[in-house]
Length: 235
Image 1 (tube, rainbow, N blue to C red):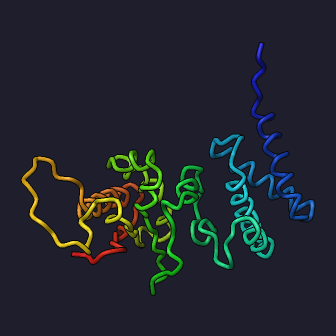
Image 2 (image 1 turned 90 degrees about the horizontal axis):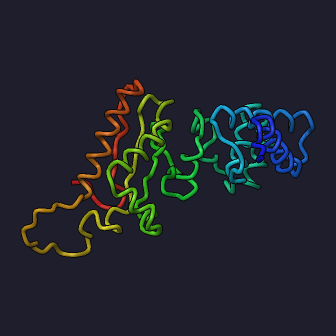
Image 3 (image 1 turned 135 degrees about the vertical axis):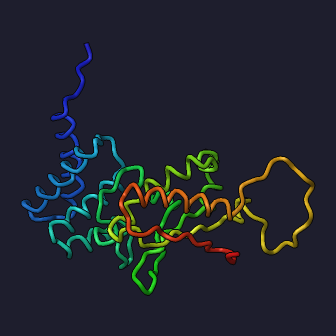
């Protein structure tokens, strides 16, 4: 008879692995214990269990250090494990105050969604949805071309605007590259009439705005994030 691991067994396995990751940083034992406990508690609340990517655990360790006000240790950890090169990590609590679900982290790890390195004069971060990344992975591309897939992605990104009550920006990049609009370098030619009208850049932007309007109502935002084209002029 196969004996299934209990929740205590899973937590013990996770804590052992976290201890191995944290020990390399030579933290004070009390700090190491506090960090490991914070990460285990968070994963338990999220319903996540091993195996989990070490890169995701590195991020959670960083956030635990920040929550414990160990900012110097957090900066050192980010420089070594998150490859931030002096910038704040995408999921620093100041940029992303809420939880970081595994699916959201995976979207950022694939660079399908990413923040711009600069912010607007008002301090809003420009979050970019890069359609060129979809072209490189056919499976992901096939899923996201369906509008329900795009809706699911925006729902996962929504916590990025909770702290500002919906004030913010979403940029659409690479729509020409993946065929959602005619490339600006080519002269338009008349097309034969067809019953099928493919999605174009304006349709994608309108759909994003409709989803964001619905998220505004569901999440009680004061405003709705604006949606910008990043690689060709708006019309």
